[in-house]
Length: 445
Ligand code: FAD
Image 1 (cartoon, rainbow, N blue to C red):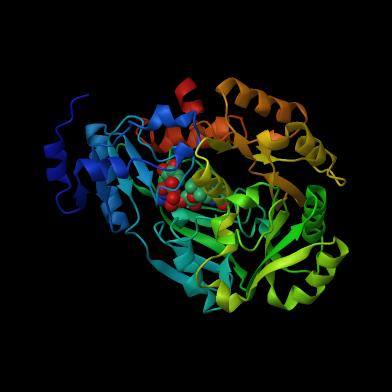
Image 2: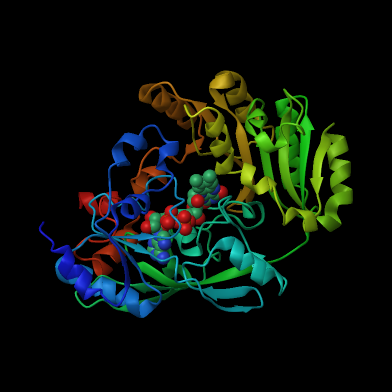
């Protein structure tokens, strides 16, 4: 379609608009390159304009222009997503919300924020009042709250509070629509699920109410083990130790720790390790658990020191993959959820079955009232066929794979069409302008 971009810039002349080619390509990308499958599909996709609104009124203005000229619009937070969530498949406008970064208020256990607030910046301020976010991704320093809701799933803290999709982890949102007359809607309670983790395909979130967790002084530790299954069983036992307050249990099989440049002097070669965050008042009982499993604490940072320099957080969740790939760029990854398995027999099976080809990296989390091991396995990539074979092998054993090698919303997630999100899209984006090409249900209707 022929859009006169000079005319569009004129329409948006009171807003910050970016047309510089280098900036456009940069702001059209995210971290999809972790996937050798997505890399060739997305590398050339570029927006025609980037617009940076500073408030909801400016978002409404952009929405109106997009509807009037039928311009595709893709929302962007910090662009740290892994599946090309904010890559504009059909060009158009990237709506960069990083300047909408006001914290509206923080009350007991609840906050209201604009979507561009960075997670770490929020926690720094909230901790002064004794609160923090219930969960953050390992990209917490750069990622935005709106982007985490739009494209993330969980992270550090999920061991206590489950994942973002769990009822109660998102209280309310304000959403700008792309109807013929764009408007602002407020969704509360279960209605938030209409836009939660929808890749910005059915509304632009302009404010969020998020429940908080009490903030503890958190110590960071690394414990090493001689054999992998002891480290996995230790992780499970820690997750089940209701009296030990923690918020991160990450288990890495050897040779993954050898990819961690900052810890090369700390973690002896060939050892398997647990990267952990434990509340300082719980450190004494924690030491007893370490002894029970013959672990060895090789690194410990107090809560005060943990705020400065290296943090274990940036070696866990998908940062584990990042560090592995910085040593060997041919490596890629999977995302999995293991079923309830008190003896960890499936994990033991996978560990021996795949050996070095699928290196086990576990992240324990709570989901639906149970503590389960999720995994972001580091995979030695050979061919797409072999990757799919590995995925099928896991699925045949009852292990859920959240495929990170697709940009389609449903294919990467629960693999089912979300009728509620589709119905909401029909209502608020009748012209299909929001992040086109990402929602299968819309494409196939
Ligand atoms: P973006 O990438 O900018 O956006 C993500 C999606 O949300 C896009 O589809 C976008 O269109 C949409 N969106 C953004 N803002 C809005 C809005 N206001 N309204 C509607 N839609 C919107 N994810 C996890 O869940 N847990 C992890 O531990 C984790 N670790 C990671 C580690 C690494 C090294 C990397 C590269 C990624 C990781 N991720 C993780 C993925 C990603 O960093 C997080 O999900 C992050 O929260 C995304 O925030 P963002 O601001 O970068 O969002």
